[in-house]
Length: 250
Image (cartoon, rainbow, N blue to C red; front, side, top):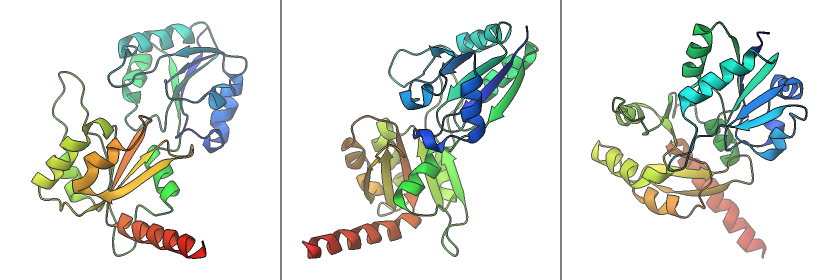
């Protein structure tokens, strides 16, 4: 048997943000290889499937990518529907291309099923648009993290060139991110928001770029996204006005 591997986006965490196609494939799956951050509520949709954890998290024991690649190819020779379930969207910082290339070179069919990426869930949590007429017409998705032996990331000039930036996998490097951007010319007063567990009762802290290390330290260790840009200034003002109204009502 030669089955098909579906690289499925699990979205930011809330099960009802899955696409209809993703939910259908989970119900049909024979085996699901899933990231460590995929919630049980989503895994429960794959009721008939064997579930294999192959998560990779910074600073913790993780499954090597070459091993994941081989497991997917082997599974496709035994099962009709193989799901590789990735947090967020498979094509954004999910190493999907490595899996696509490996499976293609071994004659295994692959299909990508998009998911809601963390930046979009975070902007929804804040109630803002990442683009705003006359203020923000460019958005950059970046990460400062690079693998061993890989070229240095060019994330700093990319953030400087964009009106709004979403920084993935940056909570543990908040000090380095803040220092690098300010040193490169980004004003320390640039508004930032740090969002933890977007779509799952998110914790949100707001402030300035110069305060980023202190803001990140206030969170509890869940998956974090950093948003940066002038679009956040209005959101911060709106939040302050709402707080003031609640206090007056008391």
